[in-house]
Image (cartoon, rainbow, N blue to C red):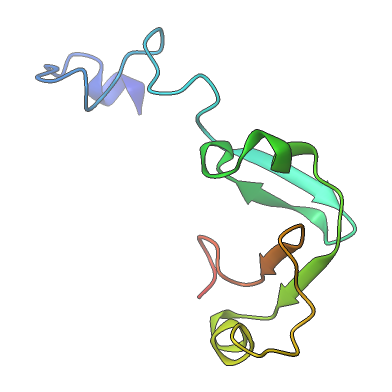
Length: 95
């Protein structure tokens, strides 16, 4: 792909930033692995607080977006401020 665009003009390097001038040092994507994602899951680190990058705690799992909508406001849902909310099937190939 690079061969197709390497000569293209850059009009605004605040939109398409050079490698040595990232918007955030921790930008990009990372792959998470664990008992909830044995085959891996993708996370955008800039969307998580630094504490979440090494967090251990209860996970509340939603099978899909419809399950989330049906259960999120249920007063009996066992969730705290320390819980991790996991929404399955809602990534790039999901919902």
